[in-house]
Length: 121
Image 1 (spheres, helix red, strand yellow):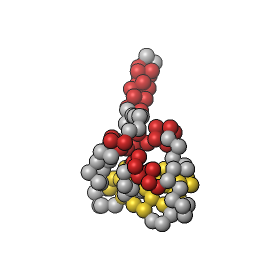
Image 2: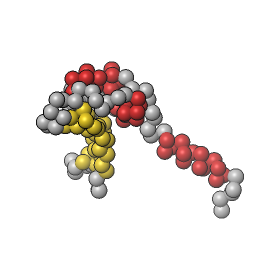
Image 3: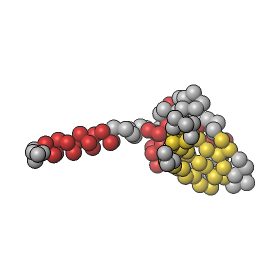
Image 4: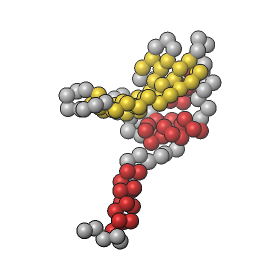
């Protein structure tokens, strides 16, 4: 039987375990660029600060590129930066998280979203 005194300790440890996985970090350009082209280990921690404290909507494509570097993918109306991309043991996506920007014909950012998808195993 579990003693009532151990429940608060257990809950505290559980809270620390879940919140310790994602630590919010202040955005800065050099750390955003850290990665090997496939994995960018610091981006997820900086993402909240970036979207909350930078006026991304209204920037031009060139301004975003100067701030974040070249995007990992693009088409005529949007571009994205990889945040997380993991695969399972069968080389299928397990988790994809991207910062997607939308732009008008004048290359001004009209909006952005965080695409975050966990795939079924």
